[in-house]
Amino acid sequence: MSTPQETPQPALRTAGLPEPALAGQAIAQVLQPLARLMIGHGLQLPSMVELLKKALVDEAVGAYGLADKGSSDTRIALLTGVHRKDVKRLREAPESTDLVTPMVPVAASVVARWISEPHYLNADQSARPLARTPKRGQMGEPDFTTLVAEVSRDVGARAVLDELERLGVVSLQDDGYVALKSNAFVPKEGLSESFHFLAANVSDHLATAVHNLAPDRPGPLMLEQSAFSLDLSEAQAQQLQIRARQLWSVALQQFLQTATVAKQRSLADSGPKHRVRFGVYFHDAMSTRPAASLAKPQTIKQTKRQAKP
Image 1 (cartoon, one colour):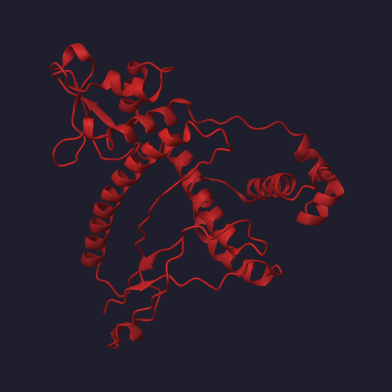
Image 2 (cartoon, one colour; image 1 turned 180 degrees about the horizontal axis):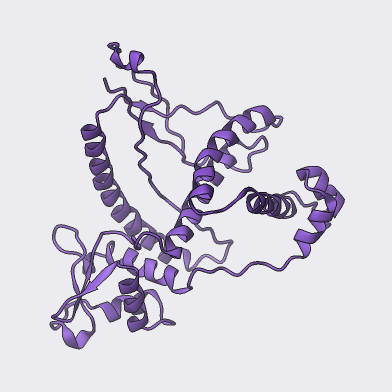
């Protein structure tokens, strides 16, 4: 029997003492998929320990430094538990170069504009195929070259098209039109770009949850919620995944349209600039509950809480 529920969230304080035991329990669960990623891609413990040391040192320097003084190696060692010699070595190490091609953000922005601007959409809100250049299309018809120019004047349309083709996001038709294969920027599996988005999406999601649980939380709560359903058959789980994709497609288009207006309105504001990320995920896994408990009739119970911005 299905049990739809909203994910409960513990009561959050505006200030308080650290909770190392509770944090440790949460981290142990978060580490399970990370361990799967490590094993699946040949990343062994010594490399992971080095990455963790580096992350601890960088966070201590960036977020816990003393105003106008920074932090000494000794203070960072006390905050993190990383040996002072390692702190010194890591602080002096050169920053690693990002292996993701600079073309990826431009290509992703082109797709985002393509699926959100009414000018580039069909009546059913799907992305319309675009003539590669103005000369290949009909008079007044939108084209791919113009789309790229609206996003960036620094990168040529041909280069963006080549990148989107390489990633398997678009197809170039025989009539000279460019068609989007999916109403989202979805590179082929196994490419370095996929790891780039894994890092960006998951780190921002986790950063939101960490912000909400911070003992001295700087600012209001951020949106971080989910809903789950239990005791589903495989067929019904698949149906929910299809429905989730449909809902995300609609929400994505509406959000991008709103974000476009927000960016235009922000141009006249000379104050500090923010970056935002709005995402969704769907997870399907076998239930870990004992078979005996699954066989017993259960009362559907709804758990609701007030959504917080």
